[in-house]
Image (cartoon, rainbow, N blue to C red):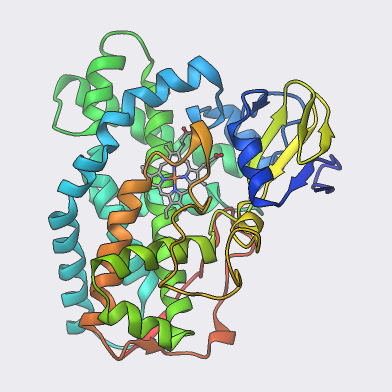
Length: 369
Ligand code: HEM
């Protein structure tokens, strides 16, 4: 554990060991509230964006639980498993289009982004035709280089769009998550349209950006490890499940760490952290802790890595994890089987990685077969 210096000169604790990361994330004396002094914001832009649209991702205790509870029923394992055939159809259709289209092709725009975008649009009741708007806005929202005013403007634009949808759905509801929130929260006066829209933008952004990066970056990782790709291509359902967990562990795309602040003095891993001090729980380091994962720098799709912390840990553990798992299992289980000679169309050294984004990935992925 050590102190690190951030963009604004603050010096939060960086927690790296697996056990310590989990201890931080399950401790109720440690807060996720981004309004608290000492909270280690990723950038001035993300601080401004969080202030404009606070979501339960950065709330604590009863307030967090009450808002999260509104959605847990929509993301139950049984419900997500029931989506598997529809997700399989989406993936098959997109692979048909890939095979019928020109080569080389950018796998990010032609496949990795559409899969989770189509799924989350369907689930939330957001028209997929509007994807240009929310995909462009997301790029600004997760950029470390955006200025605070750019981040707030992008957030405002997305909230205005979703707020309009919430109002329309309150009078003409469909069978989707936003309609349900519009009916039970907005129409009853429990939440404003803006508050429902804030919840919607969390789901919309978290629902497509993360999974899209896992699809593209996971493909790069497998193409760079042909022996592992072969195992995935020929693997059964259990191997695919393991491969998804291992790629989540190995790539850990939410690479900025879980951000927290101590509310009381706490001891983590023998180190005293004082009330008011910021904490960054580094999931990527925890997922490579050799006390927990044997030869952690090796990509081994046969290992059991389900206890990784790529979805976080504790009360904020990813709400959409089952959906992400089903999507990734279907994608990894389909793409390389249907296009067995899939390969990079440029040397891997020429790929541009998203070092400047809150979620890691590749900007584009030219592939051919
Ligand atoms: C591979 C894909 C994904 C990864 C790696 C991922 C990762 C994470 C992580 C690390 C957290 C914890 C944040 C924290 O503790 O500060 C989180 C929370 C969350 N994720 Fe995901 N996520 C993924 C997909 C999704 C999807 C598909 C959704 C669907 C809508 C989603 C919705 C959420 C929400 C709503 C939260 C906040 C939970 C809370 O604060 O209680 N995520 N995710």
